[in-house]
Length: 436
Image 1: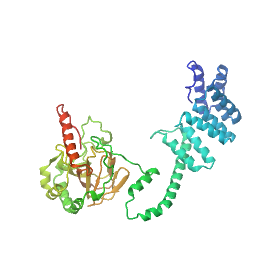
Image 2: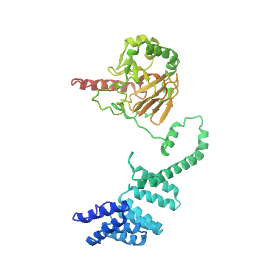
Image 3: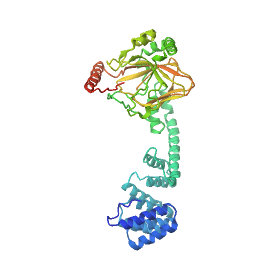
Image 4: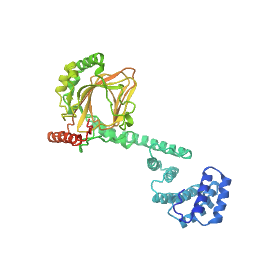
């Protein structure tokens, strides 16, 4: 209970009131009563004392007496939302729904995100048969709870009731929309509807809408697509047609040149590792680089000539010192790559699956897919993504980067120069700027 409405000279009253509240919360009725008598002896008309006295009457089942005490407290201090909430509880016990609603609205006018007031308002709407309105208020109540917050035991049943009400309403709304949309969907069955599906799923709370969060350079006004349309990359078919040749070269170097594999995550131990602590300098996620930091790894390319030729034909990113990058990515059995984001949305990432046992998945934003050998995709790695290999063998894919097709030639040239210039600016102090 807030005591901010009390005057600065009320320290003794405040201390006793806080002790009463603790006793009431613990169910120590006799102790609460003893302390209340002491508070009344000191300041019988103090709004905080009147409020805890009203709460005590509620505990005793005397809602009428509680109402009188709480209304008197509000006459003296109408700015405390807890007083209005307690009065609303008294009205609930008396069956006065209109009065309860007005008291709850006054509490929420003072503190719009008051969790208890929102929960009680929603339960009142349920009593009135307004289940859709109740679900919306329950939703608002749940939004006030920070993620990961530990809830008091006495609130958990009310919170679960809110969760259940929201879920029931969302399910009913989803079914209603499906019926209303059926004819329109049928009329446009030949056209893509996946973006609309995402829109409705987000509205119903089934999926999130993720935004790009580059760790280095964010280029505005590019479409924030998780997976990009295949038709924007006509050369994908040629890459896919070479899957068997690429996989044969990978399998050969994996068997014959294990020394060429490097941990993909290799930060200095002093770096803030966050999600990378488990994989840092670990071969559980390793790479066999063909291009790295814009430079060809000639020895590796020589061992994979057909892969090298196919990579030569694609519109690779060309930022000296940074891109292109191309490598075989090997994820060990029972290994997960945690959620993370890439450096810049000026380039996109291509995956060509080569060795994919069952149990391998990949999520970008709100969409999770399973790799299939020979089926490539292009995605924006500045949108949160993660990968799993839940199998008992390795998973291997070819990864390389390409320019984001949303950039004009002029914009590519500007980005190229800007990235190199940023690197140059910091180089005189030995700083390395990560842009990949």
